[in-house]
Amino acid sequence: MEFPELGQHCSESSCKRLDFLPVKCDACGKIYCKDHFQYRHHGCTVGISKDVQVPVCPLCNCPVPSRRGDLPDVAVSSHIDRECQSDPAQAKRKAYVNRCSVKGCKQKELIPVNCRHCSLNHCLKHRYPDNHNCTGKGTSPAGAAAMARLQQKASSATQSQRDSVANLQTEDEALAWALQQSLYEADLKERSSDQHTNRRRTSSRQRSDKSCFVS
Image 1 (tube, rainbow, N blue to C red):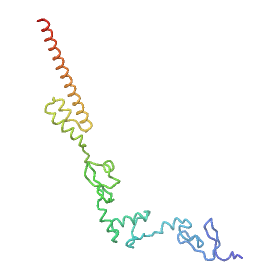
Image 2: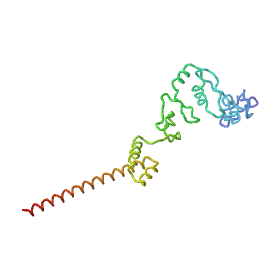
Image 3: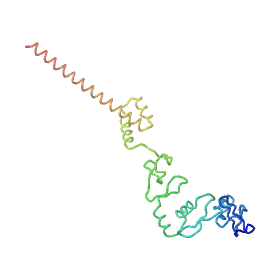
Image 4: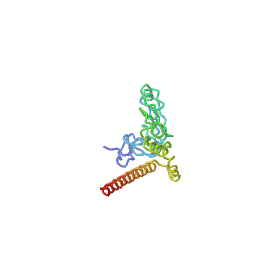
């Protein structure tokens, strides 16, 4: 037997239950049953915006302040990495001492990840030169050796060659120039060898002709 004059119906459209002990939402002012009176259960946008909960660190049991809209897990993780005074958190901070050199990045790694160009330590996310705007990018060992060979040959090169070497700005150009010089020197040696062979053949023919004339 129902008593319509007693209690009130739940305002949730999918429920409409007659509840004898209804609860009025303090945010939207509507009536709900025991199953839908919480903000999240009836989708109260006003209540959710004012329902601010402070997460608690599971290690030190201290409240962790966070900005509105941020995930609690992110705030707690940041607290454990930087501020938590519990023994496990302090042991972790002692192990992870290699901090990223990128401005604004506070990530730390267990082992150092040094850039071979600028020699600075970075996290795994910023370990590549393009990811940390590397300003210390230099030539590779092969490029440096090629540049050294070019400088040694510059004393015997012509003025135009010295100018072209001085204007080289990339190791690719240096390597290309060194390869070109190597091919040029090999061609000169081959031509010199051919000329020497031709002279020997000519001399041999002349001696043969003289011997035939004498006989």
